[in-house]
Image (cartoon, rainbow, N blue to C red; front, side):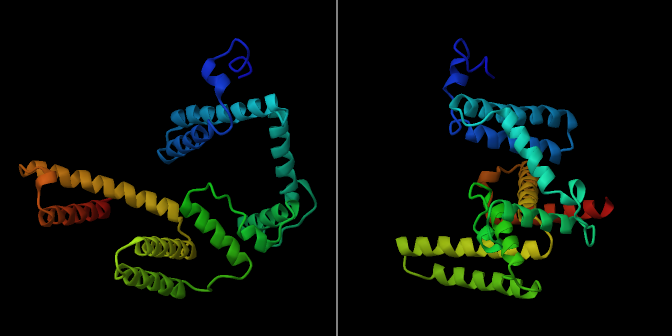
Length: 259
């Protein structure tokens, strides 16, 4: 990387900044995650290399700016691991020995290190996270300071309440205020749905990804049924498409039972 950004290096690499390659970092991480989801170790090896390249790239830029270098990055994460695992590297005795207790200790040590209270940590979740993941983390931290329901029933009631409020917003006169209000209520509805998922121990991000993938497969299956009946999907009435959709759902359920 020093060579690529050096005097006789690559023109593109020499022009890059932290901000200009920020999106590349995100894309490489998502591609590594996809390799994990697909159980493709060969691809995962390649994608982890791409992620590592991004780390080296940013470290080199910082080194040139006199901020830090790759050794500082590695040293920092090693120190963090040691500090946040006092039950391994120190004399802390776990009460239950559970993974949950370890995570709680991790968060407590993190807040103390960063000199944040548990309440301040609620608003300290990175805004650059995907919205569903950020919502879940904020809710989890709020729960740690006692701001949470004890059961899922009132959370489901809140979800239904948000649906009603969205319906009400839709009855308002057309205009910017209505558009803004509808967007706000949709946000509240999604936030409430994430809360339901969290209470049930389900990752909202993973659940939505799975639902989207299922939708994609069923749309393709509907298109195949249209083609089988000599129809073009774009010109097929919605009632017929809905009929094909229900057939696909039934077929999928039968297949799942056999599996």
